[in-house]
Image (cartoon, rainbow, N blue to C red; front, side, top):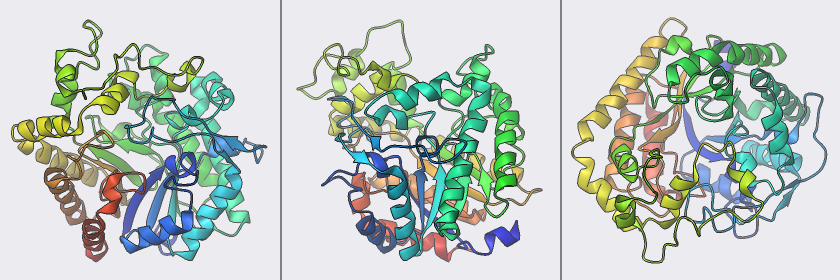
Length: 428
């Protein structure tokens, strides 16, 4: 383990380009010029880029998947929602785009964190549902090894092209508790709300897939991505991970807003009276605002529902932020305590294995693209609290905030990113 980490940075400063680095590539979109984005990342103090590497979209278990990737969008849906506001219409040589990412990483002395969002959001942005249908048709018990087999071929491809040194590590999949990988548990009757039971049900399948990748690539660190959002025994996580990769979305006051919006309440109509108080004056009805005809497949299996995207698209950003500021005081201590407890829990969990801890996403939660709470003084305070706590516990790497990336407005706050990335790199 120590030998594998010798070639890697002492501390990881992480910006998450997720799947947007390939869904937003048209002229004028954030990732039309990867060289410029890397220059900006280095200017802000980042040394690690976390991506959905689209292993299944690019590779079968045998090798390269043929043909270009064609991308679409959700029509009027998602235009003011983070990650969903791509223009669509691009045709991309995915293999060449991946190599360009690694070429620029090497040129800028950066590292790539490989992951997959393919059993979550990324297939929603393809022009056609073919690959999404193939993924959905794979039996739940086989999905983990399917992604692992594709990831194996992707890593082989990167190695053959001479860029293995830029891989910091590979995650089997992003946030395994959310998305279609949980079908291995729900198909047996485990409720979607029972996070501990779902994590435990997935454990042997994740261990098999991580074990396979470790055998195929003993020179690359392997793991899976879990969250700290809900409580569950960490003994249920895969026991053969080489990095403890977790995300922490604290939510707190954001949960109060979500509960008031009734997003999970099927007994009342949506939008309810509370949502109506948040909406812009030009908001269409929920019934009028919909996916283009024949495009309903885009949200099938996507863990972000249409109600939430409608709320993000049509909430007045000032009204949204004012509600969170008004109610934040009632949640402040609990939000900080959740950070303390969750970070201390994983720190204690890895004590006997001595694997490094990385926080790859966080901290308040999922907010509308044009809202400013996370980027404002309270959101920054919470992020800074988490960064101080993580570094005090000796974490290997942390993201400053999930919204610190070229496709979010927070990217423009250069001085704050420089300051806190420097804080991470200077920490013992």
